[in-house]
Length: 167
Length: 130
Image (cartoon, rainbow over all chains, first blue to last red; front, top):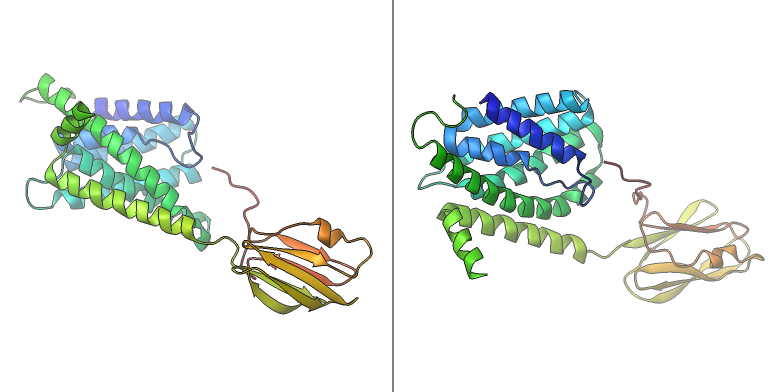
């Protein structure tokens, strides 16, 4: 699990260093790890990996307890909650793509709520919703496909015993 | 193209596909709704600091306002408003041109007439920072 979290931190940092394609929208690639963890080892692992990632990455980026940190945490918690809830759905259930899209939408919702509650008490903020939402749909879909490939790869490498993380 | 479709079909469960359709559909609808809204819905005209008229910017017309120096003509077209004639000397208000965005303002100072787009609450962004 530490291995997974380290992976996610690395991706998070890399993404912070990349120039944004559009202001306010970034691919959220670290969520690929969260989704893969969810599919392979369940929700508790996904929660642990995400929280560790946000904490460690913010320490390394120097944004701990700054607005960026709270936005990240709000988005992350919302995404985790949504994924946990959608796991309870009946039937064959969701695969990586479904989880990823749901997480992406929950992430921007959580982030907007945190932004509204803590920083910008102005309803104009929600005018950003369509732009962020379309961004979330796109990035969520592609991250989900990436997570699907990752899950398939890891399943093949570690068929039954304890997975590549050795947890 | 066909390869992509087979890959997509293999990568998703039926529930995944439902989620994809719902989210993409919802977001596209939200997007359309956001961009279909007309910009700067109305303008407020003030004379000597008092709001005398609210003008919707949705249909083209000319409106005459009684300013401190005399009649002043405003023109509305394509969701924008401008001063067209004013009895002042320097005509700076005419030089201001068309106002369309919420928060844009033009004033005819000697004539004590002020035009502001977007109503009382229409505050524009001065900057956006992430």
